[in-house]
Length: 271
Image (cartoon, rainbow, N blue to C red; front, side, top):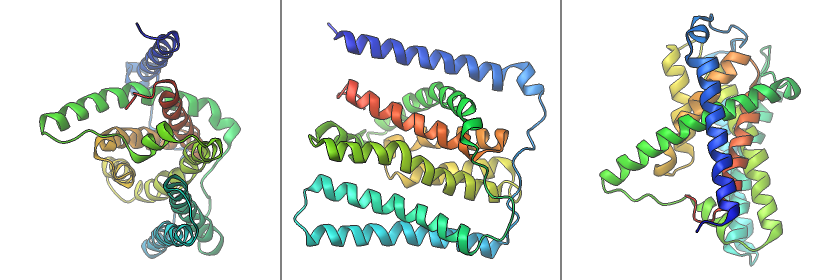
């Protein structure tokens, strides 16, 4: 017989998915929603191709160099494997975020910059998170079935195993902060605030939406979660385009990651 906490969690998840379906119909799929003109709130990123490649180069260098530095520092000190994993992840996310900051301070001469407006982004971010849930669930089930049909393994990410096994409150708190705060900020600034905002006015719309979503999914280097993450990235790009505020995507991303972590704590057998 399932434990009461598991029954409560399942009902809560179903309620969230149901709310997402309602919002998806109301704001995206209904005839009234489809009749609305496309939002023009997102300003184009008016920079040259060379400046865009400089942005990518700085971000990639930051994401590659700092993890190596963190790994070398971890090898110099007798640290546990879990601590080393956190240091490398912190270096990766922190390096990319530092790259975004360096570019914004030293190279980005264009205006306007991505609009954060977190207070105004809160409700749209919550709505975006809810809308993403039924889509991610459906895509995830279909993708998992396809992988199993092809005889490919469906294993959880290393980070999931970390949350399930670690006994250190300090390490857990650090990993939760990375997942719920740092990663959403970094990845949305790079993939939506950078790549999507640049390509949106230079590529066909479908390509501008799909490209950062595919790169976002590939970044996590985990085949079973690739398609659901692509779907999530598409939703975040559409939300950013519709509201004109990168804060909307950051809030939605933070809520999704927090929801995923909470699922692991409530049900350690969750994928």
